[in-house]
Image (cartoon, rainbow, N blue to C red; front, side):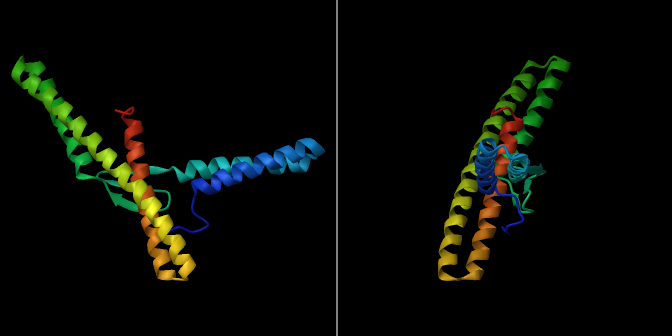
Length: 177
């Protein structure tokens, strides 16, 4: 669940803007203490931004810095498996001189890449949708004073962020393929 102690991309941007203003004021006044404070705020913002993008994929799950865990699309898991099996077939076909097995492996590998990409895009889209939906629901719950709905909205936002970050991590590790 979201709270003020968890990393936030938006908060990191606000802190970065604050640091820029502090730095500008410090440059005009020449105050060393203000310059040091601006640098500290800038460093904190950079760390916050990095932490807000932290994610790990463990088997068929994505886990984020917020502690939320989500199950990845089955297309991602199956696609990855098909790539592994296809590569094995291709390697074995090469080793024993079986051209049909080698071609079958190449085809299965390519199909696996396509299926995994489909799952990555699905998780990315669902994650973004859940983040936005959770944020909007949270605003509505806050206006209505409904703490239970606000907690549920925060959970939806965090799960969406985890799903999005997990898909982004996968896409980046595959070189955008």
